[in-house]
Amino acid sequence: MEDDDSSGHIWREEVAKRLPLVHDAQALGRLIEHDHDPPEIAYYEAFAGPEAQALDDAQRSYAGQYLRRLRRLDERRRHARSDRED
Image (cartoon, rainbow, N blue to C red; front, side):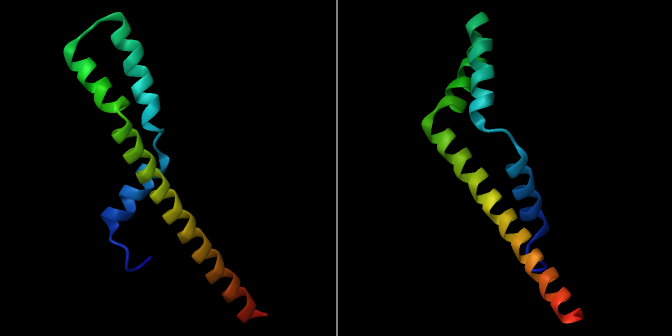
């Protein structure tokens, strides 16, 4: 992890923790049912679009895969260290 830039690492951690975009789209959908505010409708259309959903899914998947890889590498290092101590 030493070669990882800190801003990229922070971004991946935040992306992996966030809820899927569909939750925000659903909340905005419920909001615009009550009042048809043009900015809220524009936000809803942007959040509910298939391109935005696919991009969000891909970002969260990438971040999750990366963090799982870091955990596996850390576990291997710990395991190798414990084997040397025995």
